[in-house]
Length: 277
Length: 266
Image 1: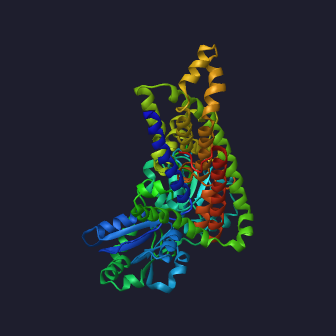
Image 2: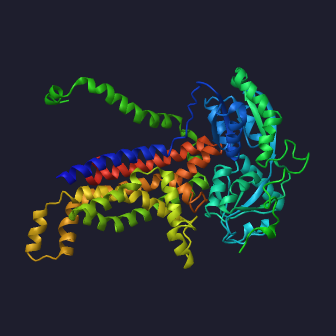
């Protein structure tokens, strides 16, 4: 009898969980950004590490409340009422739906797309067109997010099309697929590939006709707060630029000069130098 | 409400109960209000929606079958045996029920992934489950099996032991008893568990995207297609597929009601 009672209880709990799960499948993540103090920063997922550095470097550290996601998710959240003071997206196009509500915007940095290779390069990829070969598992961003647009651009320039890639919702999801070895290769930004170096991820540099430019924007809500405006000035000034350069991002105008040198030994490694077995 | 119920049920219960109903029904109702009913046929007729539907139904059917084939023996053993080890095993089986889907995804990755324990082993014999419908089935079995086992166990435990013993003393073997007495008597719970497992498989999202990726026709099931449409600034398409999923759930619940006489097993 005890057993029956227990399993009935478990049954009830599982019915509840089943219902929650089914409803959860149809809901989008909401962000109820409470505004108590500090500056709310929304940043593209490829800036996951950089925003931590920014938060540590600005005004003694810990002043920022950070929300990281794909640029299109962030924009959708802001459109449905989430509150942010400063927004950084991974390309200029992503900001388009918000432009009526922005006070100012400045391009902070640029970033190049690379082909990240799983540890040990299991598919033996040495040039870009190898990813189109049979049996190579690739992950890339969905075409609606900036890294997906960049991937389309690069693949078009190279005249390649991929069969059955896994479409991910952000650059960092692609990176995870590659660093965990589930995908042989994935299109991410150079800074992402560098961040996953410890997981054995290497990368092939790619011909990108138009590297992504990352705009920072001060929202009209942010402009109303002296605190947020001061942070925006700092972010777009030399100190902000130094944090981006440190993380391996290119200058705001990608045509102005070469990317900053990366960690020694991995800087723009030639195809031959990836540690293929 | 009957007179007895009115005499023994405090009226103020309606206040929290109403709130509970609102919390559950409100979001679903507003989802339905936002569905673009007029453009629904073309939204659901798109290739990507149909591919996802086909994949979802096929993988969920296979997963459910696996859940029954593997889960039923387990449930029978759990219902017959007692002791600390059985308790422990039952606890272990319930883990996927309470795990966050993303945790399930990572756990699956460490076991079935290319670098994982079982994945590496399979890799040496040339089998690669990742990024394929097989990966989706693995995820679905992982999350649905506990639902099936718990539901069947619930029903199996109520089977009259004296009846089984009477058959045994009349000379019936254990398999014959299981086949002709235990399983038929426990059938409502087993059917309910099967439907629950199917429904849970259909809705699986988090662990699938973490472990199996999102490849059209291969691993992009209905929930993944919803998320992709939503992130691709196509909320209309997302809502359309949400409706598709809800319709499938309704169908499952109605089947559960028809076969077990109750809307929700419990």
